[in-house]
Length: 134
Image 1 (cartoon, rainbow, N blue to C red):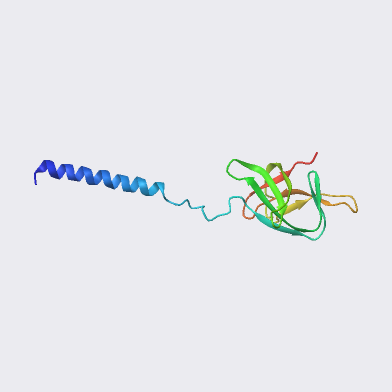
Image 2: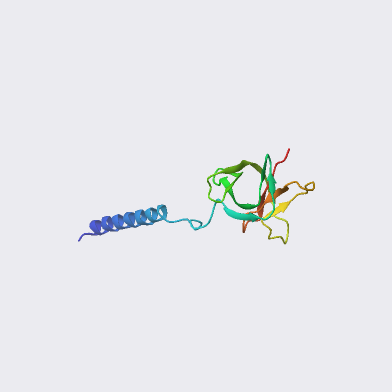
């Protein structure tokens, strides 16, 4: 083989190696692929609760981000089987209180009224969602 052939073979091999490296990075699975980006949580309440515009009886509900990649401040609350959506609206992003691992914070309600949920904190997040009451 001539020196020119060896150089061309080396260039071709380098180019193929670069393509393999680049192609491999295009099909790599992101590290968060197994995580729950919607931050979906099932919460069970033993007393009636309220959210802006709706009161819900005691039971289990699903709290989740409605559009986790475009609008993380939109929260959806639905029935356990997801057949009914009871609330979907904008929230205000807030920091989780220091030292708290509570899923929700409650407000005050008159006797006999449903207790309002002030904020929901997805499991493992330092940021939560404060509901906007008018």
